[in-house]
Length: 166
Length: 209
Image (cartoon, rainbow over all chains, first blue to last red):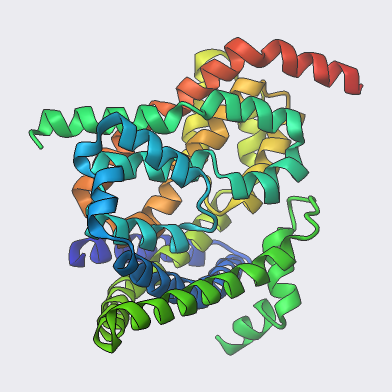
């Protein structure tokens, strides 16, 4: 955590120097993005963490383990992919849920499939953005080309962990 | 500093419209503002409902413990999130999206898919920044495979999300394995789209003109 933090802040400092050296109001525009996005996150993320924590306490641990635990194999990967597709909201909502699920017994490869499905299938994003902007045909083609990806990522992750001896 | 805060978020309305319609995208998305306000309410309802259920079934101490561990996690990740969001703003200023579209629109073959993957992975921001780029790619002459590979890369191996969010939440091993397992996905989806759906896409485009 500490090393990741130092790493991130170092990049921020380097890029800040680059942007500040450029003429114009670039840094101001960067700060605007920061504030608009920060405002969206400031309330939602603590709420999501709280909700995820409560829900994890409510779902019986054996149930999570059986359904999407490390031993659930390909069926668990498929279940996680289906679940992940329907999780709405940004990473600040979804990742707290993933963390909570992992704490209560969800498998690593299953969570890779979950995150992949949430990112690439993203039913909520299709409804809010993709259909109105790109039209149904584009969505259909993209969906058909991507529907196997979460399964693929889950299987690849399983293989990679097996190679690492886990 | 104050000046910047006041000018960037003078009201709820401008705040949201800045997300909806970044000045350079020229795309209108109606109804999304309501979606944004509603999702906070839904989260609040879920948190409250689940909290009450925990209190009812497991008692006050279980609620206290959940809240405490939630707050702990918030405190741990806030410094990372702040750095990540600053980074997102800086990258957006440094890499103009028109540049990406012009650069990608004319590439084809496997090279086009690879370029789309790299560009997608480097595109910061939510759907409000990625889909306008796809539209621009389309106008610049990109094929369906390039567009699909771009969206897949942006969503599964986005460097921005990795730096802003994943580093804050997950341990390095999980992060690296997830990233490696997702690296081939943009090319695969691009090839599927190109191989199976090019005909369907082009016929529909011709019908439009």
